[in-house]
Image (cartoon, rainbow, N blue to C red; front, side, top):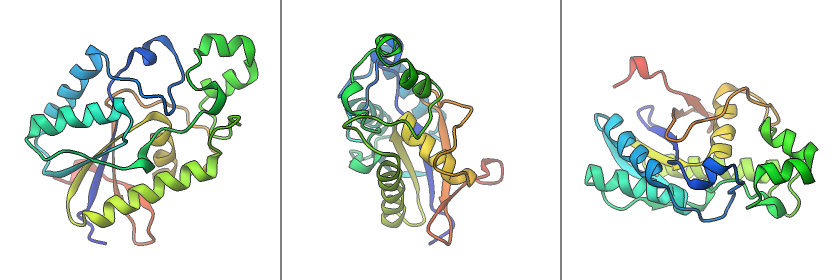
Length: 203
């Protein structure tokens, strides 16, 4: 694959559920006013990069972020890829974390640590979730060889990608949490995986 293929992965703008600590998962929650402002700011920050496409999770908070940026750049509509959706949190999806801390304190603690091995009843297991994320990125990179692509997605998805480019096991707990609008630049490797880009050496 052409080594000029680069993907800028960004977390969507803020929602009210982010502010109040509710587990969103696949629930369709729109951006709040700050999230829309963050999307416009992200468009300005990245405007000097030669993006040809925007790909996004179809969930409303990511799609709205992508649409704001596409309109700012006068690009065509984003392409929505289901593989970029957030992890499905099963029965606790839509539950405030404060409530979860009372009803399921052990699970709440592991979610707070962002432990990828959390067992979400009726939700997604780690390997199927991670597989779909990496497969989605591979498909996007293959469809847009030699270009810059902006990818709008979610926090737990970015954790999967971070482990991938750092060469960490899927089960590793990261000592970090991506902020709304935070970016990670990656590029394909010859072995069909991904690595981080050194943005200081690249246009």
